[in-house]
Image (cartoon, rainbow, N blue to C red):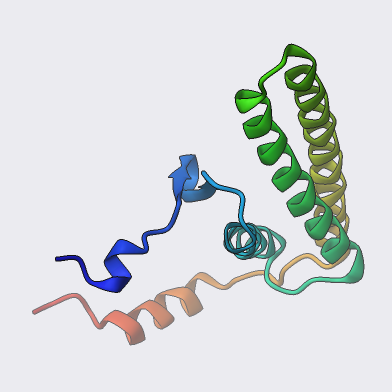
Length: 138
């Protein structure tokens, strides 16, 4: 017999690059999708966000969710007109997602060029590795 937590499996799958892709479009799936994408995009930005990055991330998540949902609705549409309408909406959402991705990339590049990371001394790196892992002998 299945335990309660085993029978309530996540209705979704991991696509390429370990990204969550929903199969059903419930509020819980949307929240899971939101958490997964937000964590990925925040890591891409380096962890700390300014207002422009936060807006771009929010809009990217909304656009991708709408694109996935409309693509799924197009696959299950009963009439040709409904399928075409959902495909048009999904296409518009893809364009919006690409636009916000371009904006986020330009924000990250501008911030990186304005505040480049400090140079790293190789001796400090080796010292840190030695402290963490020892000299490698066992």
